Amino acid sequence: MEKKKKLGLPAQILIALALGIVVGLICYFTNTASFTTNYLKPLGTIFINLLKFIVVPIVLLSMVCGIISMGDIKKVGSAGWKTVVYFLCTTAIACVIGLAVGSLFDGLGWFPTIALQEGAVWDKATSANFMDTLVNIFPSNMWTAFSTANMLQVIVIALFIGAGVLAAGEKGKKAAELLESLNEVFSKIMEFIITLSPIGVFTMMAWVVATQGADVLGPIALVILCAYIGYIIHAVFVYSVSAKAFAHVSPKDFFKGASAAMIFAFTSTSSVATLPVSRECADKLGAREDLSSFILPLGATINMDGTAVYQCVATVFLAACCGMDLSLGQMVIVVVSATLASIGTAGVSGAGMIMLAMVLESLGIPVEMIMIIYGVDRLFDMGRTCLNVTGDIACSLCVTEWEKKKEAAK
Image 1 (cartoon, one colour):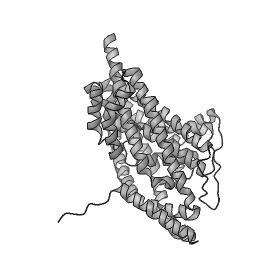
Image 2 (tube, rainbow, N blue to C red):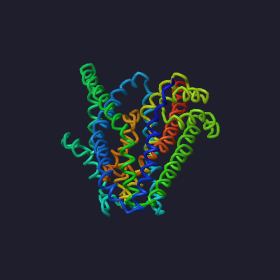
Image 3 (cartoon, rainbow, N blue to C red):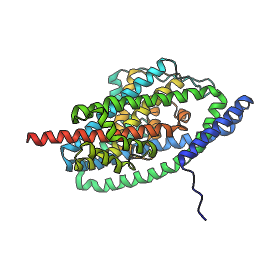
Image 4 (cartoon, rainbow, N blue to C red):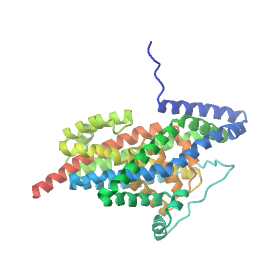
């Protein structure tokens, strides 16, 4: 007798989301919203607390290990640095696109204000000048940065530790092994916390709908639309244009050649699982085999342009839900933190949500707000994985052309 196939986590989360909406609507129309506040919300709060607990160690350790692993890039010379620069530049552009599209939707009044605590509206979006922001990035006390979850300072600490381990050479190997071991341990802890997602989604969604009514459901559909507009803009105006400008591949040929990998990534939501298809597509489009075999796995680890668009759109949306208007300085913080953190966290399961929690913490937006959109995270994930894989292929084409020119010049 065959064993019954267990429901995957995405399916569990979607079921929990649907059940949460149903229970929330029942409580809303029967005037029993206090039931969700007294008995369901505390369970969701436990899940949120666990998320807050794991954010700092995951960001710190995964970034450090990502930097340490990049020591191998020296072996492949200039191609490695060109790849990293390409990914960091496109991630920064992705952040700008996400913020622009999100701000447009917010400016049109399509994102609502949702008071999660007895009508409270958070007003922490105070503007700060650039120099103050710059000074505050650098920590004076490492433990204070950890205890206050100052994510920009945590990123800087990770950069210094990673660089220090690499600079120490042979003597730094034991430290690297310890850090990699700790990273694996905390990754397993995070995987366990992620398995509790259905409970968190059900309890928080039931509470939000019970206290807000059906009005909250429309904006969720709008934020998904907003994210996909950002994905499409980035794919067309960054990836296909860079492939045309640097690799002389027309947008039509580029998307036609990459379509198999894009479709596979969209359905599997895994850049790593898509690697064999991505490599085949990249090679057919003209990427050099030795370069694509290096760039595509590296891209699957550190390239997260789709996540960057998602984070920025979600941040603007959740800030609007809190009644906050993000200042220019805070938008810069979002761009910088998301771009730098892309070095180490993209390969971690659940990275999208952990990264979003990190950005919200740095801006003073309650992490609880994640639960408004986390139930439909799978829909975001399909688009952002597709975008990430498209970027990996575009990068392999561009670097191939740059290396050809370098060799021709020699």
